[in-house]
Image (cartoon, rainbow over all chains, first blue to last red; front, top):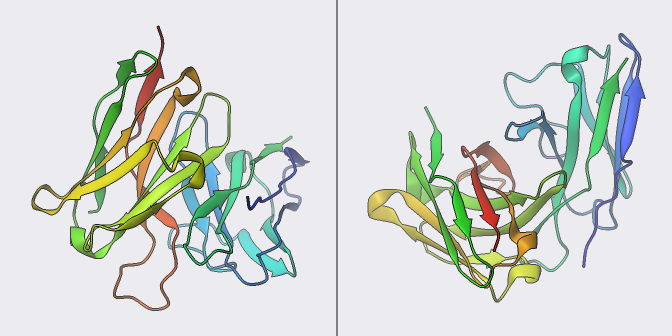
Length: 109
Length: 125
């Protein structure tokens, strides 16, 4: 079955830049989406269609893609950016079945 | 505004089935796909399936192929997830979520935007 691979954790100092990666063989052909989840809360969409940012999401968050790797960049990191970030995409079968990465816990300290 | 309100917490025995409902409001129900996603304690998000609320057809994760049923009642703007043959590993928070774009929008892609309130399902003997 199709898999998306993320690093388990990323740490960044306040004000610095963090990058979270997501690897998947179908990402050159399928869009990547990014969700932020804080403890006890439902996920929130922060990036869609690889690079687009929903209204209300900080401009400090940006998405990019290169080959089989999609990336989420958090610039000028703040404590409020802490949480678990999940990438999401759909599989290669044409049935549009979804798949999540394992999640990356972002710590700002 | 768009809201997805889910049914309350459930406690089930192994082998039983559970039904979780998701009532939508604030938009034209039949023009958006609804997804189901679950999250076991301390684990990652897991996509379970989606339903086209207009046509009633959908796709489920192959992991749950035989145990999951997703249906909709357009008159009640409600989608129902039914999971059968429950085991302890099905203990999780179950979320419904609306698709990011409506069926008539282009480009159309399958992803989750607005999320439901979440329903905790506990499977225990």
